[in-house]
Length: 321
Length: 260
Image 1 (cartoon, one colour):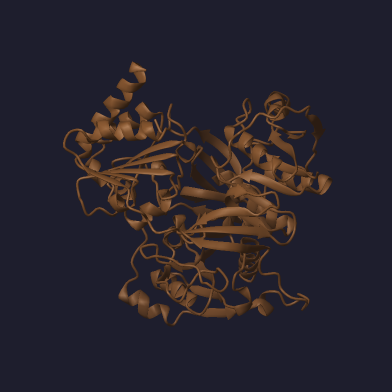
Image 2 (cartoon, rainbow over the protein chains, first blue to last red):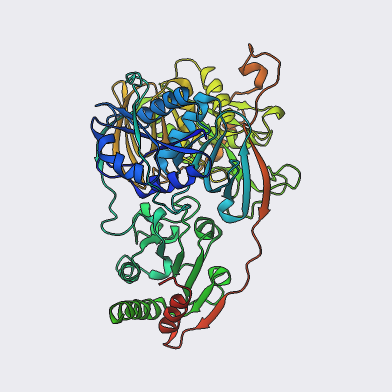
């Protein structure tokens, strides 16, 4: 079977879960081969995890420049890996960085690009959810080596131990007049909570939360459920919660197992960002709120009564076993 | 300075959007078309720079006849001239083709210092066109910027994504894509709207942009939709009115569904 290249998401020490998901996805199409782009020594630290999740080959593109420039080192490494191994497909995570790499790679290869795949079959047909869940579309690449950005959380990571063979990739040096340099990095403010787009539970607050202080109710429920916190645009615009947590058309799209909307009316732009959630729970005082009409479980009531009671119940059941 | 702003006309997100039965492309007939919100902020950023450091601002859009409205709006906001790429052969263009065409349109503008774009449009949301345009033009791409500073010969951007924040720097010329948090776009004034009618807009097609291309056919898309299924209508879920027990009943339900 031909190789399927997987671009590895990592922090220099650990492989991100999204990569293990991609390795699962890659096995449907061929033989998973990982591409590690990082500073010298990175591939050796990641190899064991990659092999355990099914990588038969690990292509290491290591250089001191790997962290200094945005996206270009990964684009260059993948382009070289594609030319050397003629894979059946290239998979990347559909994160901001991953999509950027995928687009640039597809253009250089004159290849078809599928963004935000949530499923893949063995013939390479990808399922995508477009217009914020209004349509499910199945698409395939008709020209060039398929470059597919897979939405985080769409595949289960599976252990599938292999003996990984390591290969070196030596991409050309980076042209500093054609690449953006990263001069400083600051971690996301998420703290201990899972990343919004990857969380299996998301609890979001809207204008009904009525202030920044009110978001504590949202956070407490999220923490009880081990979930991430989101916010509607109305709540973000009102200054109740930071922008990076905005769920919706102009914010992030989420697709968790459980989405709990507190005090969110359900404007179409918000629905676009969350309506692919597997189960939707909504709490709203306004019986006419559109979100109550699409929720799997709708509570007409005061979120400041319902959410704390829900939090207490969850904590009690967990600790009570 | 020469600044090029890339904008797109999209269906209004405040209305339902549908795909045509015939070829699964966006049904523009039934859509209310507007200048994309995030692109409008890219235009605002260009005009702010024009006021701060002096610049000639060219607005570029690819799309059918109606896309001229999006260009006119940016001209009314204060841009100097427009380029409208309009060609029926581009219907259904994929990301790669779209970026190739936009890159070719940017190349027709002499001595470009900065290309600005929105970091995503609200229709496709692929969020990759700006970076691909930059790659094709050999420019550094500073994407997802929530703040942009142009300084001697270079550009700096504060980047915000789901994995945190970063400061990016690059020499000019460069491409910057902005997030919706970068600014509040201005409203065109009446004077601006009147002036926009007199501003030059060049309409170009594929033959203008790629005069040396052979005529074996232009590759519009490298992907094919096999099937498109509208989401099934919402079915009513469980609905309760809180009488003090909703929290407990909800937990019971979530446990039964194995969600907690």
